[in-house]
Image 1: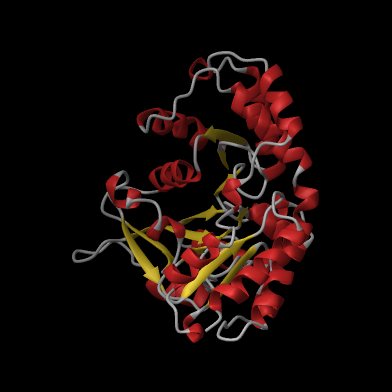
Image 2 (image 1 turned 45 degrees about the vertical axis):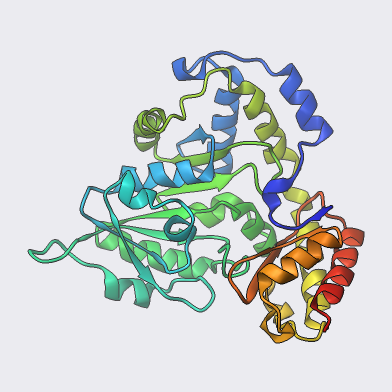
Length: 342
């Protein structure tokens, strides 16, 4: 099977497997796993933050961040298609007691003027704003990248009003590759950032939450409450260290394959996509012109040896990664053409 459902489907590289087998371990709940400690130190250094916390998933990292920055009964400003709103099981409400103030955007990129109009101070009749959340790259908008000027403007405006900004940077390394800048430059203005090791970077498990040392220390307690207090987690952290050091430099290849996919999809009758807007490794395309729903297209693709999921009835999403070669992408295009044919 050629699997383009997500970049979470990658298998550990031989180097990751060796590192996992040979990892020096201890009890991480006691802070005694040396490999986890090295991973957290290295992640903090790469992000340019004081400290970092190794968590099992991006959802847990975002959940902890929202909790750290808010109080029960507050609102979190976010994009209307953001991952924290649509794909994290309402943890914003369930764990933090907060309401999402969702702002519709065309490409998943919030602007300060939009955010500013929705900030609410304490009042007798409505929930005050507790946090602003931005997603970079934006998953459901097709891997779009926040311009640095927009990040700075949002953060400057928020900080002037005493508000914090959290970045869901699950794929921030893709953003860095697309912009040809360091991750630390992208996340410098935000207060906390979560990034995944198990997506484009290819590690089997894990994400990082980075920010001020005091907040991250408190975040360890929330990680434990959420069941994320792992023990000899160095076997996982070892793969994460390899992912941080080895994978970022080859992300442009994934981006080139995504553009190749998008350009090919644009030539298939009934499929609509603007290939020029594909900036990273996510390709969202409209299949409504084929006369078939995405679920049917997906089933027909599976029969042809290709896995691509639908987002809704008309939209589908393909994600490139290091286990999907250019030849795989070419074969996937042939399969899509066949599945979409009348």
